[in-house]
Amino acid sequence: MRKKQGHKKITGQLSLFRTQEVSYHPEDQLYSGTVLRDNQGSSYFSLLARNRAFTENLLETVMSPTNLNRAYERVRSNRGSSGVDEMDVEGLKEWLSQEGQYLIDQVLEGSYEPDLVLGVEIAKPDGGVRQLGIPTVKDRLIQQAIHQELSLYYDSLFSESSYGFRPNRSAIDAVRQASEYISSGYEWVVDIDLKSFFDLINQDRLMQRLSKGIGDKRLLRLIRKYLRSGMLQGGLEQQRISGTPQGGPLSPLLSNIVLDELDKELEKRGHAFVRYADDCNIYVKSKASGERLLTSISRFIEGKLKLKVNQEKSGVRRCEQVKFLGYTIQPGGGIRIADKSITRFKKKVIELTKRNRGKGLSKVIGELNIVFRGWVNYYRLANCWLPWRNLDSWIRRRLRSYRIRQCKRRYTIFKFLRSLGAEESKSWNAIMYSGGWWNLSSKLVCQKVMNKQWFDSLNLYSLINLFERNRLNC
Image (cartoon, rainbow, N blue to C red; front, side):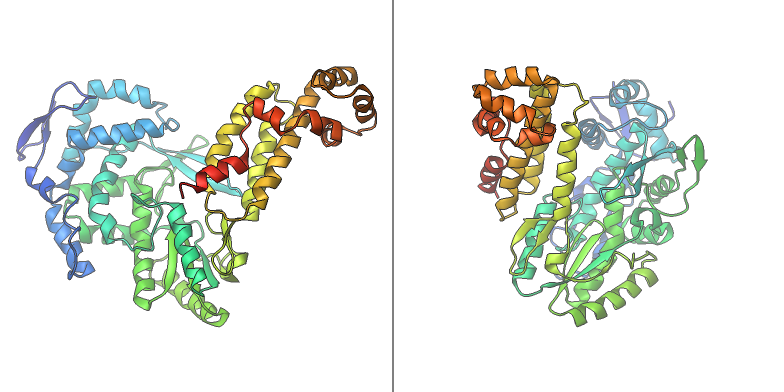
């Protein structure tokens, strides 16, 4: 195999490879991850310049065995769909054991060409579709390796008000901060919606910004190749001249680098704001000041950042009228689940309890429990108890209807209710005059024998109980 000349060689053992020699500059690692930790007294641009000096040979660190091992473990844990080459994560492991060293050599030499991105459309919760681009697992590995190293240099430059796709930060933290602003009297929200953000990122501006903080031109060329990767959709190849495919490991970091300019502008103006990815809310004390801000900041976004503000969805609203990361924050800082979030949750439950699924009640409950755990864990900040109780009651009714429908005939339903201890006359009356499965599920005789204790015996999770336990860990 060809080896790039002019670099000091060290031998590194990557678990996916047999034995390889990797081009590597030890002095690069000296600063990786530490250069920005002590930045007091240094301006933003001087820090970028210092980073640029420290990253002249960063590609060697990106492709080092240690970093690639970490990248592979992350790609493996994320799983994900196959790309255009149909190779899955397990196939990648086998392929790397044979071709991994050659892949490293190609990347370091600059001869590596990314594969096409597989275009996939997924439905948005509020209607429409979102365009995703799924790279091959080989490209996901390299992108993840780049992401890990660049994050060390860029993350501490980002605003404290930025929460999306960053280590030790989450949507929960963003909602907490938003609640604090609103409880301090900032009850008007400038809600900014960026139209097709990932598709409209100006690649030239992004590369120019990257070049100010990254000194390795080979790495910059590789990133541009990923930005320009064609997309295969419906058997046709589409070239990309703008945007970054939403779905690759590198896209979230690049999006934060793009929108960091917006953060810096808002900080310079002294505004209270919270941004999670392209979802940005600015908090003000009056509608008039909010409208002035929306006009001026829209001008900045479209003129300076070359992005598009969705005027139909953006606006100045009272905090209780805004949905932010699935929550709605009330005046005074109270947090509740947004109405649309509850509607989406109900749609998911309905999907899992459709009459034609042909699955036993225990299996359906097992699937629901998985959804419940994740949902309650995310919405544990809500301090309104009523929705949890109402949802618990509605879910039990859905499951009663599901179980009754499985009986199919009236006599089979009668036998089932009697087996649970229901009275004979009340069972027949409920069955004969119910008017349908859903109505029957609300009859007193059904509620009495298929009660909470009965569902507890089937190991159905209670949302209110999960919520109480999760709140203790908030």
